[in-house]
Amino acid sequence: MVPKIRRGSRTHGLLVYLYGPGKRDEHTDAHLVGSWDGFAPDPGRDSSPDPDPKVTLARLAAALDLRVKQAGTTAPAEHVWHCSVRTDPGDRTLTDAEWNTVARRLVHAVNLAPEGDPDGCRWVAVRHADDHIHILATMVRGDLRRPRMNYDFKKAQAECRRIEKEMGLRQLKPGDGTGAKTPTSAERFKAERTGRTEAPRETLREAVRQALAGAATEEEFFTRLREAGLRVKMRNAPSGDAIGYNVALPGDRNREGKPIWYPGSKLAPDLSLPKIRHRLADGTADQTTQSAATGGRPDWSPPARERRNATGIAERAAILLDSDEDEAAAQLVGVGELLDAVAQTSPVATRAELGAAARAFERATRSHVRAERADTRAIRSAARGIIQAGSALGRGEDGGTTVMLVSTLVLVALAAARWHSARGHAQQAQASRQTAEHLRAAYRQAAATPMRALREQGRALPEAERRTHEATIRAALPEEGLRADSSSTKTDALAATLAQAERSGHDPKALLRQAIDMRELDTAEDVNDVLVWRLRRLAQLPAHPGEATRRPQAGTKSSANRTSNRTAPTAAARPAASDPRNRPPRR
View 1 (tube, one colour):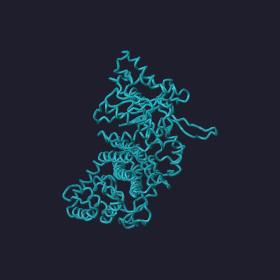
View 2 (cartoon, rainbow, N blue to C red):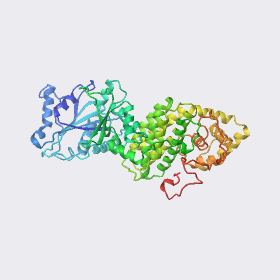
View 3 (cartoon, helix red, strand yellow):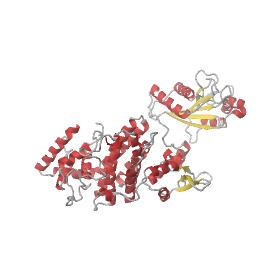
View 4 (cartoon, helix red, strand yellow):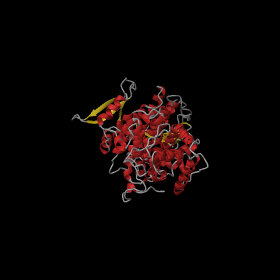
């Protein structure tokens, strides 16, 4: 049940709309389901004393405005309180009596007309569709004072959550005021008329978010906005310093033919210029990528190197989220930028699901929790590296490293869901779980070909070698309570990966132990798949099995103790547990 509250100054004009046909002929059988005294005239069904509904509507408007006129100049300029209340499409149809109860509870909750108060404000509830009502109230009490209506939206939301539970309706997640502003009805209707799939506000929000992903400077951010084709207008103080910005879509104009501008703060709370500057100051992305410093092979393409780098950094973000510390709040912002970067540069086959994942996670990046040490340089640099490296080709090493990264991001999203749930952030936790589902869908699309090839390689191993690796898998996984079924084909890809790692000079047992110890696996949809990609990254094996495997260079460590500075701590070399970020994950 969703309440939407607005304020206005035209009682009669709003009633004309509520009792009219609607802008698209959607109003049917408009009638009152409740009023302040139960005896208000109903222009929809009342035929006495005058059968003309226009006369009855004028009488109703006059009755509602009586206290406003009596208050004179002390009445508020915008004296109309308008609240539409809509049930979920899957809910049952409420009766008029039930809608009357809903209306009475809401005007009581926001202190317009408390139960038992003879001086409460005058109000009516109009129903002109099965799934919603409109509550119109005039904000002058019977004693000619204004009602105390602080936080009316939050109070209406809280009352709707209680009504949903009591009436057996779909129970929505309680909000915390950090969500982005949703498009108005007028914006949605205009989008439909002009053939857009979404309102301009939503298109602009995504475009601004993508321009910010990995941006190193404010100038770079605005350059990206313009390169994306958006109109940008700066707001300057008298001193000439920029204090804000507005964006508009080309071709989106009002009746006067002027562009329709949206301030960044009206797109989302964290997209205002001060918030963007704060983010850039907390975690300015490095101007150059980190591939050379993170042990990337020189023969890998730039997109492949950057995705491998980002995978290790994403693993560390998951560990921080599992630590349950407030400092992890900063990592959520970085993960959001990383998802935006991957969605922009992903292969075509996975772009839709990855884009949906990035849009869903946008809600998970905002809460009232603030990190005191908001260092997001590593993760924002990873996002920047992916953007600068350009699009993955969707085949070979490029596409394989996309699979590797997406597999890790699934676990990061689930860690974010647990982090938010522990703090009662219902909407953010749900958004994180939705993100994980989109990422899983993208993973299944992208992993089908490389995993099929790896399974074939596993089945083609010599019998003795395959049994040796299956024994290694069975010995390692039960310790985690995650038994592998050696009689199935699930371990074929894992066995093939261990065989390739061994041929490259690694110790399969130690390498598998390291991959398992990186962090928990309980939330993995397929443990074997997760371990395959961890192993291939740790051993620097090609992400696509069709790529050539190269042995470690002479003089390098070939055991599983070799880790780059981008991998998570191993069980044998973890920092002290006194640092909450380095505590072992909860099992």
